[in-house]
Image (tube, rainbow, N blue to C red; front, side):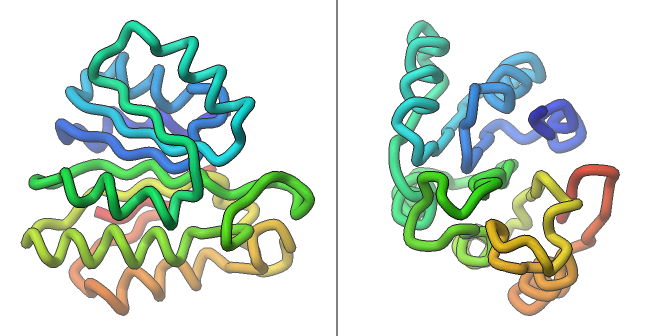
Length: 170
């Protein structure tokens, strides 16, 4: 299940999602009125599902590739505060993945530095909190405290909150 159901708490015009999966986050973003949606998926089968599902939505832009490689292209188009839904991690190290099995720290660095450059604090939502325990190989053994530390090192003004399934930074 996508953490997209919490997107209504972060109502910016633009949503950028890493990890389209089956399109749940995109569906929530459309429901909550995001004007522009960018979603990156590395798995060709999942990407194709989303292409078919959202083919008639001109405000939904889908990208096939590694989030670390594609995110800079998207960020270059963003000029205002945006919402980011980070879910590009896999559940199994044998799954299709990019340069990093769990690119969360690299994604955060790109997003936070982009926000600093614009002079805004993007809204960031990280899915699958329970797997950031430091003992999940598919999550590169990253802990939720590592995520919070990475955020605070780049921009100490962020407020980091922990939900049942998510980490949010605003």
